[in-house]
Length: 260
Image (cartoon, rainbow, N blue to C red; front, side, top):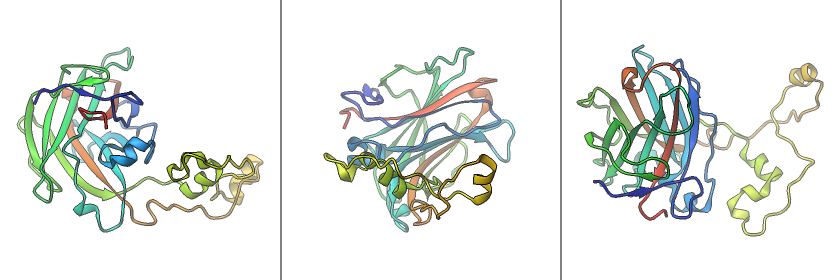
């Protein structure tokens, strides 16, 4: 498949969810995380990126792991019956030159075929992109894996697993929506104003003493992980030699032809 696919952060014709990290292979996680960040992604949860991680492969010092979590707020127990959206291109973008200017040199792409437990996840790359920026095209396919199945390495040496996992994001979301109600899509189009008297909860007396503050000591409400919400994860273990050496930039995008 070589059709042009458009994707951008906030673009007019694109659906986009983006998280980025500049890192050394020792592994720092991405610097951004979100859930249901726009009406477009609420309407198409399979294209909603919640987190991006890059970390050292635990059992092979020569490999690095790229992980993209999508489709937030899958209720507990429903992860294995929730599948990737076949209309979405899932893509890791990598910049491996010294400038780290935000222009990808390599892409690793995925697209689901079919649905249900036998869903196939087609894998493309990693290779130089055919198009860059907000336009994307599939690079040559290297193989496929079955949904929620541990598989052998693909012919180019990378290993891919794609399936459900527990959402590992911790955030006092209920408090956040009290402080900034306009961020809760359920309050649109007329959200109440922010409450400047409120702050986040879950601090300790020791923290307040150390920092000379009086932050809220009441318990935070981790409604995501405490309630067993799931996400869908795409995890690729890649030889470092395929991505370059030293510092690299990694980000992830989701794109559709229609932008919806």
